[in-house]
Length: 146
Image 1 (cartoon, one colour):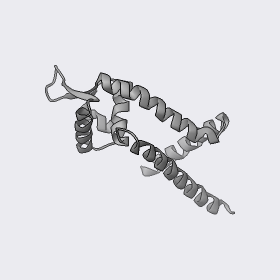
Image 2: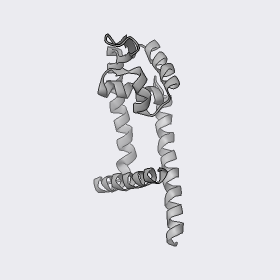
Image 3: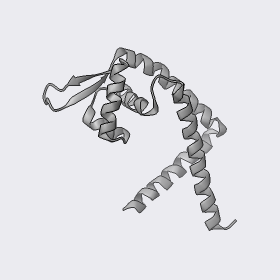
Image 4: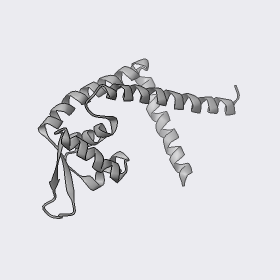
């Protein structure tokens, strides 16, 4: 296989393996109370604390209209609540509830276990190599966007 063919194959394998991992993660979420987008919001609040709703979309790479819908759903489930900013009435914070924290205490452990299971195929050195290689290709792709 020549260099050009090897790079095309590497790209194809990268995309297919990424799709398989995403499919597994999505399948896992079908069994849970919240979907992947809701989890992204909950994980942000769980790890970073209260967040202005207007800034959540940028932090988890999602559009503003979608965030409002997700916040509404999570609020109905009792996992978060809205809290107005005392200094600026235009700003509304999303805040995780105790039920939300308890849910995430369990869910984060389950998610980490699934991720560890996926990466059981590699030893520690291979994981480190993959991180470095994927980071390099991602940064290179970013530089080509400009």
